[in-house]
Image (cartoon, rainbow, N blue to C red; front, top):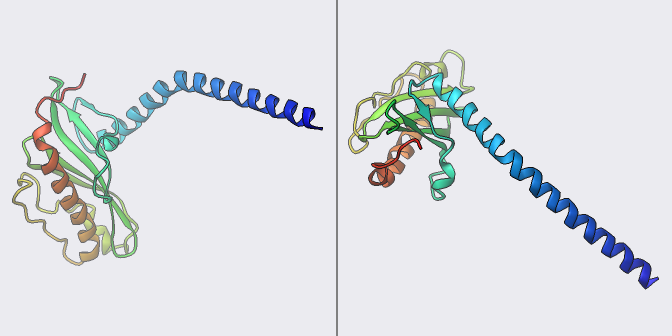
Length: 183
């Protein structure tokens, strides 16, 4: 009885080791392809709203202590390959749904374009945030005053929460951005 159990245990151990090795081998071939496709998908989504020469893959892993309102971070690059801005993808609770937005902060510390990506707010009321610019474009991250969309206070506050989180995070990394290039 003991020899049979030992035999099956060794067989299962060997099978597990072989399977683990094969999975690791396959992953080493597919990981770069998956990473490249993720970068292309993110760049395509960003290109719908922003015009830059190139975009980084997600940088969120580089910042483990980021505010939970920030769900993703991307760098944008100009034709010269130098960093031009940081785009934050944010998510915060509006009146009846999560509001997703992109918040762009240029390398010099001024806000770029803020774009509402998705929401399920009240039709006709919450929709007002879709074309609202929130009054922060070209303002410094150190001195900005967001403007709430009239009639859509809760929805606006969700986007403003993302703007505030992006500004706070940008201030902590701004000094590190100077030498970043798209290499």
